Length: 451
Image 1 (cartoon, rainbow, N blue to C red):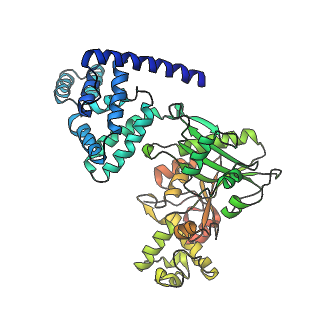
Image 2: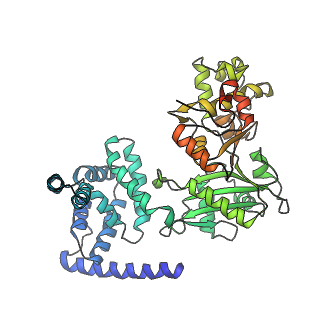
Image 3: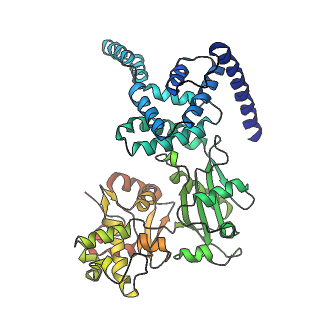
């Protein structure tokens, strides 16, 4: 792999050098040109060496822009580099006169915004993919102030999904022998349970732990997403034990617990990797450790506390499944501040409310909670709510210290996925159904139909 990368790096370097010579003779250099002129020149240019050089010059020019200049550049992409109106009109007339597959294909090609071709050409530059991912980060920042730029962002997402297709991704195990540059990125990008220091990272890479990440050939030292796994005896219910427990290399593990999954590249928001990663890691672990019988998560419930506060303040606490939920009225003004653990006397009410939240609080036909949507869409089953699983400040603020197990049952994953995406049915255990109350049990514990 390294030899192949070195070969292509040498080829690109040769093309770049040749292109610089050509452009230098033709135009006396382009270093001072406006980025919009560079873009137009790049779209006109045919020679391979010239394209590579102009692409690099365009990306370098973008890197020198301030926030205002970048916003203007994205507006230029939106307003000036859409589909060519004349070409589109001509293709539409030809299709109307003769609606066959050839004219339909020509119409589709004419309808494509020219900025997509510009991005493809930019991607030919050395480190072009890395720079375009970074460019998208700037676009997302501009999009928050200029919603009309969504058209441009849609084109970025369309191309990035193609370039970061699962077929191009490489799965690597990350351990203590992994280059320090990548290990530093794991510490930096961990988004669920902060890595405190190098000793903490070393613990997460010990014999009873696994860490896997997806990488792309164009970004070999940048993890795109990674997952941390604990090998356990039985279903784990405490993330504190997983993070800080003693190393147990000889434990007869029968369960793999996925306790943290982190997306690393802000510029790839909207490009999904997690579902592929979990399924491939399950296959890797099953092949390595045949005695593993269960694959499950220990997952946060990031929207629960926010939802709970909102419905309490609005006087809409669900009394049926919650039982003694009235105790929680005025929750933020009571003796239970956001960064403190709830009293044991609230355990019954809170776990029932949590079951209600996970099964019934919806966005459309799907769960309100983002982590629940992710795992249930992947075909997992909502298995168990764990009281005081994560008593850290973040865990208390997010989900009152609770976490949930989702189980990936190979025999049911496909059926669960289809029922979820098509009907909004949530696969869940009998224990969850009992917590949520009789109204949820209508589905017999297999799922809740939603109209």
